[in-house]
Length: 341
Image 1 (cartoon, rainbow, N blue to C red):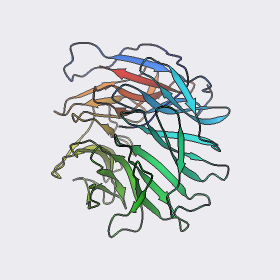
Image 2 (tube, one colour):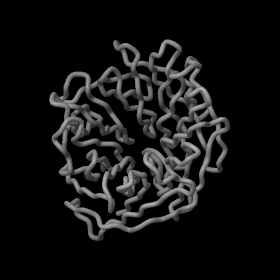
Image 3 (cartoon, helix red, strand yellow):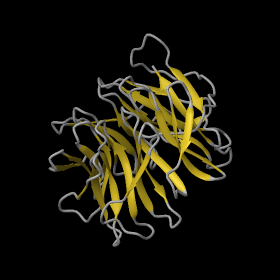
């Protein structure tokens, strides 16, 4: 699962969904929302980043006062938050208990990790070897049901290393073997397995610490990245081909890789299919840049959908196949959305 957004609900419209069929008996509901305090200028607005099993969403909103975190309950109530000393707050992931992990930037633009409990208590942390000057720091990206957090830190030499932080606060760093440190974890599952990228390859790190790297068939060398891992160990991700087009991938726990393209995918440079999040049943949510978003069922059927305006980005899916993300309007502000089956 993944990210979060905004304060007290300004629920915007239900919108018509584009369809292409993952057999459904009823039409899904698309609800747009904005956090109070979100700006309406270019680069401002609300962006949902992660949705948990209860339908609680976290993400960011940006206004004249910078970037702030928010949590939105399933009934639409939005609460904003910032760690003490934050000049920019970026929640990334919410777990089943409602705990949120992410990072914030201080006055020197150095990153620090944080975890916010469901009751609102915020604990900040730094990896032991994280550098203290820009652009070094600690960046937390994903939290699992047990409260374990993964992410990366940048040391004083600007090398990037992965870390896993136990719920107790103990932090273990790790690097993919045989690569210049460029380890970027993106997701941790309930069993403690971690997925991400290192040196241009995707990787899976078992809870025991064993790391397996992989590249998608047809990928340009060193252009594969794992974005999300579920409890079964199935990984969703993305790879770039030789002409610069992105494609989605699914990697089974056995190592078998299936590649796919959403119907909305463009064929131009850096266009294509971005698989962002996988849920416990193997459904995947993602998007096609500057176009629509998609839902791919575990069987491989794909439905596309888009917001009333344009530029729809689905970034997180929960076990009930509810999807959270953001979209842009014609004035370029961002708005959060949740799409429920």
